[in-house]
Length: 209
Image (cartoon, rainbow, N blue to C red; front, side, top):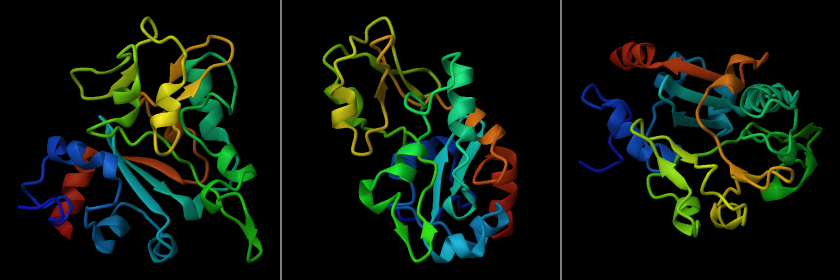
């Protein structure tokens, strides 16, 4: 069966979804009924503002229609993982979308700003890892690809190779970092733009579709 099978059919396991998680919604047909069950707004569905990635805890649902650009996700990310407050080294990116015109984001159009939280896709065949000369980006037994700080030399090859430029080299430590799927970005999101749907709830929602 092709990877265009209906998302979360009853025999569709978490492990199978993890193999597709790097594609976000590309190549995966997720029904509007399923997303609505997971709390995604109808407007976000209509405007194609929804992205979904697999976390160990469940599905990370990014609803750009709810994002207010408060940067709380970036603050929580860096406080948890780095002990500092910094948008630049945050593993979830909002500020760069708000203030730059990267891919058309951050532009003031039709009386509204376009921005959203964005993060690592945890690609099955990661361009960042393939480009690293030190093989510092490794997948653990849980399948999460992280930067081994002992191996990283801060060359920036991973940043250049990633299609979304998600890894970031810390200018102070001279080490690269990327999302480790800790979920703290979603925990502190006040608007519900980021949410993690536990796997048991995902399975229950799939039964209702």
